[in-house]
Amino acid sequence: MAEEIGILRELRDKYLLTNPLGKGLLKLYYKVSPPMAEFITEHPSLKPIVRVGLFPTVVMSGLAVNATLAEKTAIGSLLALVPVVIFQLFHIRWAR
Image (cartoon, rainbow, N blue to C red; front, side, top):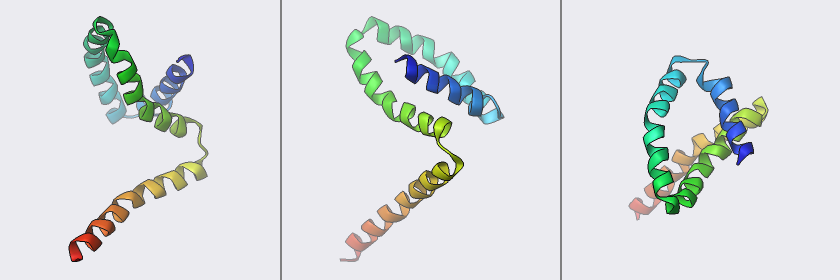
């Protein structure tokens, strides 16, 4: 878990603290997260669910922090194609 926290801190420092939108998101996070953390602490059965839910965030953060520019470009391009593929699949289905 320490590695995941390190990745999230690096994302915060490299990307979120460097622009107004990121700073706004962090301000919201720091306001909302303490009550959520307290609630999770009071309900330990939620901890594994929260960890699974945060996994995609940690993975994407790790990619943002550790990937080269070429890798980020490739990943971004592939992600941009996802809506196009979904649209095409639905369009083909509706055409029938």
